[in-house]
Image 1 (spheres, rainbow, N blue to C red):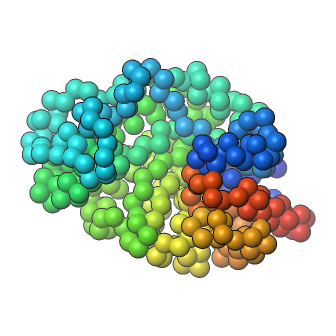
Image 2: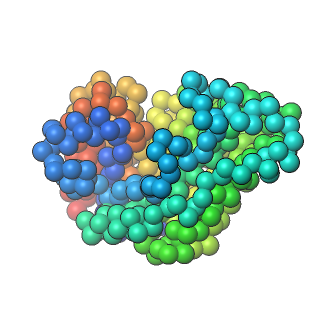
Image 3: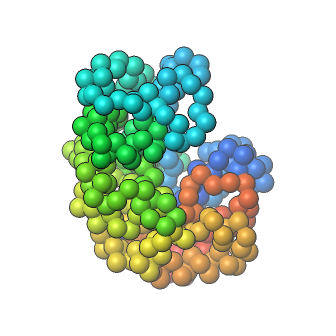
Length: 343
């Protein structure tokens, strides 16, 4: 099987010729270090050397004035914290939200560049995870300031709804451009909103179902209408809402934050008939501090819990340089060794 075939089979059948592997998308300093240590010519060659089964190719917005964010949530101010008041921090009127005109334009998306990147990944035998990252939970939080956002869910829910709708409308329109042109080339829509902390959800399950899940469902339904698979990213302790995500139609869950409450592989295994799992190899303690043999043993333990519908990968894709390349290679090696043993 090629990586693309394997990736699709795991999502569709929870089985392939072997479990999958993805090294993730480490932070730039980490990536540069790995490229040097592996003797790779660049990012693409590193992915080939690591035997990645898929690549995450995020769309690129290239036409914004230099230094201007896609969503100017702070009205040009410099960010100082996640709780910093955004431009709607004091807003209590839906009309004021609707009067705001500085929403981003989905026409700025460079589809030629995006399609070229997808094609190059497919030519290397890997699957493509892409589409708009659609991190509306974070964007809306920034428009209010995180604490204000959570409070306004109770004091001004209609204002929260209005901001959310505008933000999600943008992601829907941008994805529509992508799907209409090249849905047949997309192996999975990959969407991310971090809804959990180390110990619990950021908001209650009821608030999640009221303010977040309907927008996730819009984005999932849109992808499904074009026959595109859906993989959702959320860090943190999100086990209470995994059934909601399954009901909403997702097929894969990433990154399985191993040490967060309720995210133990043995607990998540209850969902293995409903989901493909991507991630799960701990980036908080094991990968920074363990030895390659420790990592290989952990991959075997996780396999016993997750089964064949698993793509082994670090429990966060954007990891730091404190994780040595040899430990990521150990994940890959354990996957390959298991594959050879099963033949």
